[in-house]
Length: 305
Image 1 (cartoon, rainbow, N blue to C red):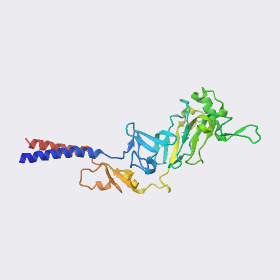
Image 2 (image 1 turned 90 degrees about the horizontal axis):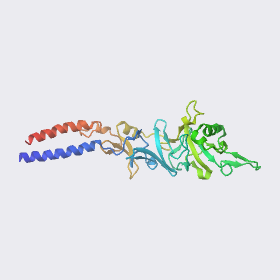
Image 3 (image 1 turned 135 degrees about the horizontal axis):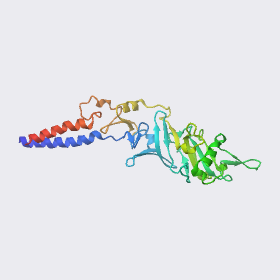
Image 4 (image 1 turned 90 degrees about the vertical axis):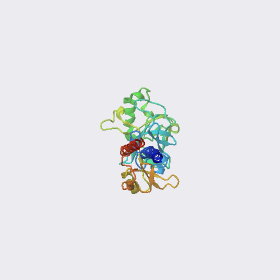
């Protein structure tokens, strides 16, 4: 009878050991996506981060790539500056000094929580001087005038002359147009088909002393994001992240949820687990749980002999 009871206890403990071992390491909302740290308002899946961002920013669990999706396409996110609330993306169809290719353009959804950063500059390439709406005809019919940013015309010169991939096409500088989406708002869309341009380049930082060296420019698109209408970082989220949790939301009610290690969800933070007698405390590593249980399992096995 004693042997039977010991055997039952042993198998129960063994089952608990493996169940607990996997449970301690699980957390629905991940802290990273590839090499990019994930913090509020971004998330790695349903119920993670801010619900307004979920439909636009996703993390591929297999490729571990963070992606921005708009009505114009999907764009890899290269980095996020949480302190400045900035997101940097690239467009694979964008023309750079490395390669020139046709593109459809880039746009943001009108209700997206993003806007273009003031430093973002778009350069339209190979535009039709006769048909593109960026070149409007003069009232007297004597020619056309460009609606592009004249103060940045030197950018076109450098791209067309110093950028090898573009200069090889032998385009006229007059077909280049610099677009700065400073006051165009979040619904700005660059439809190259309507603009009668074959491609575009986008960059957000020329670098000190690099204006005439387009091969060294930071190609991509810089975006700003807002936490909410009042531009406030939710205090409850700060407490959640400081307690090793990940900010998320209830997928049914959209109310705030703090996702703690071990898969536990709370409405505040994960600090309560510090004082818990449970061995599911998230700051205790897997080894602190596995090693003591391993000795107990060994002791149980020896007692059965």
